[in-house]
Length: 158
Image (cartoon, rainbow, N blue to C red; front, side, top):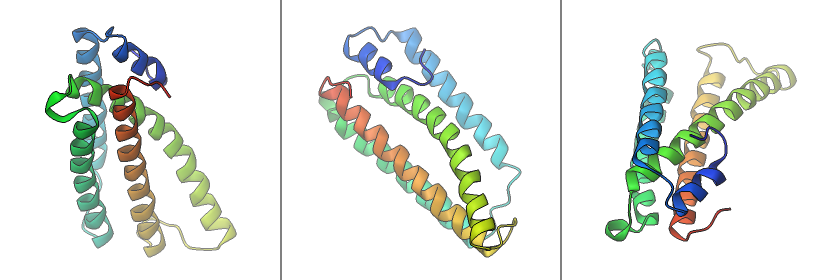
């Protein structure tokens, strides 16, 4: 099971070395990540408009990710869509989570200290920043998932 190297995962899938137990591990790990994320979000109250807009945008983008990844996999002529999708998502989510932590704190520090914009919880500036930032992260996840699904269909590792 790979946690960082998507190239090794794609190679394993292309060379038909991606077994049922591998699929299960990725499904389970992806389910665990989503569950942990949802438990974390249960403490957040999404009453403000920015959070509602972000939730709607994220939901729509997730549906688009499913659809375009399915198309990239070859639609009804493709094979093992769910196994490929879950494993690619697992690695991308881990990568984006790590990069997200670093980028979020660096950007927050820059906005607060160099531009003197209030960045406290509940401030309009932070709410707008969160809306734009996390929407951008969702778009990256969508684009990279589609890109890697297409690579596997073309039997390329890049």
